[in-house]
Amino acid sequence: MPYTQANVPRRRNKVQSFSKYRIVVMALLGVLYLALTQRYRAYDLDSPWFLSFSYNYCHGDIESDTFIERRYPLGMDGVHLFGKVPATAQCLVMDRTGWSPTSIVWLNLVLALASLWLLSEFLRRLGYGDRWTAAFLLLLGVSESFVSMVEKGRYEIFAFLLLSLALWLGVRGWELAAALIAMLAVEVEPAAIIVPVLVILVLAFRTQDRGRLGLRLLVCAAVAVPFYLLLHPGAIQEMARAHYPPGQSIFDRTVFAYFLERRRHLPELAMLVLGVGLYWRHRKEIGAAVWMGLSLPMWLAASSLVLLALLQHPNPAYEVFAAPFLLWPALEGYGRAPRWRCVPALVCAGILLQYGYLFHLNRHEGFDRQEIAVVQQQIASAEAQLAVGDSQLRICGDYSLWFAHPRHYSACDPERPAAIRSADLFLCFDGRLMPDNLSGTAPSCAEVGTVRRLREISSVVLRGHRLHVQVPQ
Image (cartoon, rainbow, N blue to C red; front, side):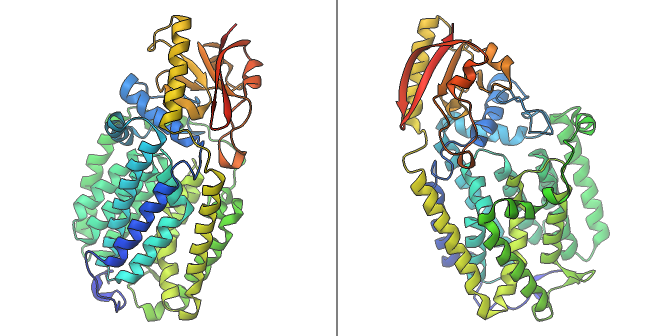
């Protein structure tokens, strides 16, 4: 029997397209995301790293990773294997709003709220009430994997939006559009393979004519596969020949590693496990349609866990794709066990306290447009002294300063001496800007100096950190 609104469990709350509960929750989440701009991770590595892919692709027709030069499968390696669509989307916006840490958060904020609203409409179409859906949005929206997706310039936000859109289309009965969008999402990044699998599961649960669904899936594949190959010729062969790092167990690639390696997430893991247990205990009362003994929420949760465990390119950021489907049955379980409903509220409060601590810790950190403008002035002055044009200047510097000169900018790393030897100008600090767990590790001026002898031509203090502008001796 298909998973339709007719056999979805009761919801006492009146279901409305524009619920005041959901609107309030999304407004509060928007405030949270804006407040954490440059306060979640003041000197994040991922934002300039991924934005460099987009900038180089749009402005230099460069498809490889020239920022850190981390080749696939150790990294995305630019956009020659994945990501040309999100890179183009970022360029269309950032070229107009400016390439800055604040601009990318504003873009991600719009995409994130759109994704949450589509997810809420997906659940509403399945018969879930407004209060339950608002609680779902709140718990998902404050989870660190989701907040991290909003605050960084990575490409997960685009795959998540396409996942939400495809689910919404699928639950409205537009199977062809849902399947096509889900398959096209694979172009975004390796982990986006999870999108079509989950969407096809939803479509299979909701249809009674699976033969027709199969034909539609074949049509969508006939469009999506050539689309990917057109954007990334030779990518499949390159990925097939790639040498994946040995020594990583299946457990290290599971979602649970995200919780266990970062112990601050253990309360969330306990909340999810308890909630799923309650769901399983009350599954007969819930009365949702099942296939092979499992309901749709359980199938989606299990599938997301298995798919992420099988990925040969694991990353903690990918946990966000499993988060909605782990939370769904867990919250259903708490809805059936009133005495345990305080658990999600307590966990949510604990997460918000952690963000409060991060905000306090980073309140005086983070380079905004003013600091970036100061660095640009230093670079312009150095260009005049070196008699080098801006388009020819090659900079090797701290990754956090990429926004000051996106063109021909490499992150300095003594393990990549070629990038240091080919640079004309160096931007470095006396030491690390923040502890390792709050920012990427960038080498100090002394470490860069072990590869190439440098002399200083100027210096300036940014947020209490002295930046040294140096050139080769």
